[in-house]
Picture 1 (cartoon, rainbow, N blue to C red):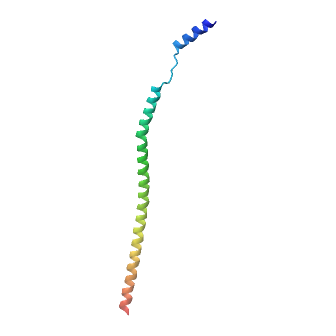
Picture 2: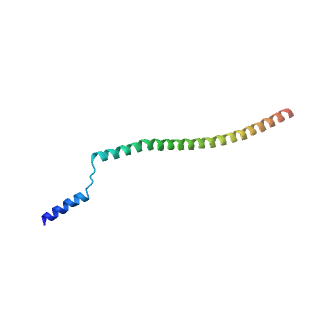
Length: 92
């Protein structure tokens, strides 16, 4: 019986060889992953920085437009007050 099992084991090992993972395979996978990370992480970082800068620029642009409008309103108010002062000064 044992001879039969030994023979079956040997036939199994010949027909279905076991694939073992060796050090070269792990090194290859590590190198591939490191190259992928090396190319993807800078791209992700740069895209994220561009997004945050554009968001800041958009916020500052909106504030700039608001300040320009306030400046226009204040300038109009100053002109109105100046005009009133000139007319009142000439009447007296």
